[in-house]
Image (tube, rainbow, N blue to C red; front, side, top):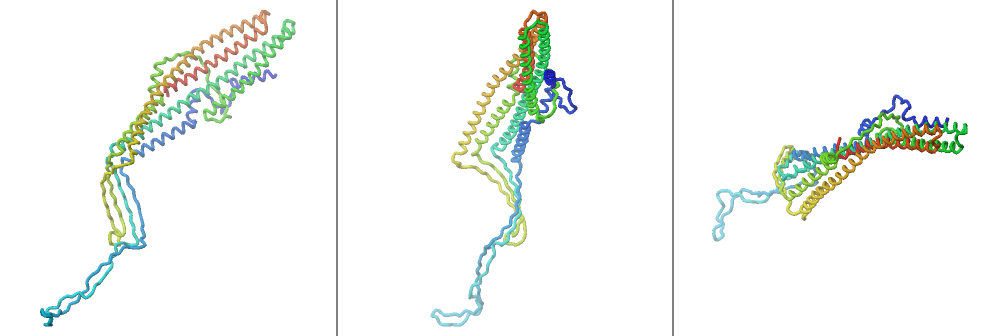
Length: 460
């Protein structure tokens, strides 16, 4: 009864009926769910949104900048101007001869100053109000704004390639997790079949022993082999459960979700040529596209640094509605317009050093691009070699399974006829189980290597 329960559990993942709410998965569906739920992809998408907003902000620098302000100012002391004027009177003026003798008075009255009058002119008011609108337009900046806008656009491209890179990595992770879970499930089935077969063999050995045709040692060795295989089945079942949990976590699904893996491990021995794969990677790999954008960004930043000491031309207009207007304590409008040129004269050589830094960053970007291109060629070569080796290994392991199946059939006949020892028979059974597991590993490894190659060459 215990053996039957172990066998039943061994085949549970592959043969048990699934509930209506079971998540049915093949490799393509697993990748689709991972792409939809992966947090790294969601973050990369938000970075694209951020970069596009930055591009819009850079474009806004070409447009007029309009602002408005309102102010109220209370003066504690107003400015005044004191004005003075002469105070005179009309009177008859006495007349004297040269010797100082009084002759008489003038016949016509004369205006004569007799004092000074003063008054104050108020130059400001204690309460001051103003509503002002300002329009400023940059006219010419030697390409600074244009290069800044190009950098913002390249930043969008760079983040889009980062998103593509994240998606490619998620495809590989989801594919690997799916085929590892499927491999574990298939391995459970293979081991369960081997367990069933070994149980039958133990029964045969026991029957032979009961008829005096086998020794007690044969029975003990067969039983020991069965117990060891039962322990292996239990371990593989645990590994299958863990692989399924890893798959669900990769897909962003709850670990308790019931899953049915609806895909067969089919053989594929297609070989890939190296040079076309390298050419595709150099043209399409997101990392290289990002670095090429980084080189363009560094070049644009260098052009901006070269124009840092050149003059900028701008125009500005202000319109205000305020109280008081001049010396009149009433509301009124006013405006002014300005055209100007701004130019740094001396910045402590900071702009010069910024230019040197920008030139160095441009050279670094080109060196980084060359380094990644060299590393990518080696990566593609290793990936192509791995894929082709797995394709060949699949064919080899399939032949090994065929040979092991034939050997076990022959061993069973010879054992039943008393021409083969129990130990030799069990060796044949173990060899078949190992060959089947190795074949399943080769099939799964080929699919994972295929996904890695697709990422290496930049396929979507």
